Length: 121
Image 1 (cartoon, rainbow, N blue to C red):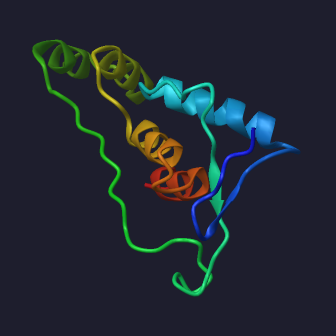
Image 2 (cartoon, rainbow, N blue to C red):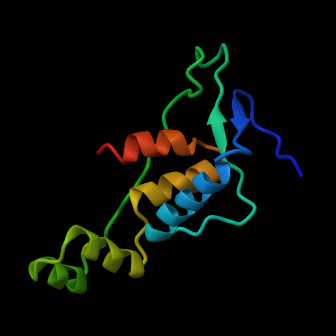
């Protein structure tokens, strides 16, 4: 079954796409989002409308942490960033990377753009 790409994007398939998908799934899972098994990822291909950038407009990525008494306690006892992330994700938070990957699965953006923006903050 071949997915039909929206205008201005190309479906990412073949080659190292399998390894890339595994990494994307792992990043999403660590951030509180499970990528559906049938997810299709796109890569910006460019067109006249986007002046060949492959992107048009802006999409916000969100990460919102509920500062519960348990989170406060972990913070005050000096938990590392990784420990805090695992703790709040288990408590229901979705990281900014996971939110971006969810939007890539929905076709709103691409994994390349999510990683470019979210991993460089």
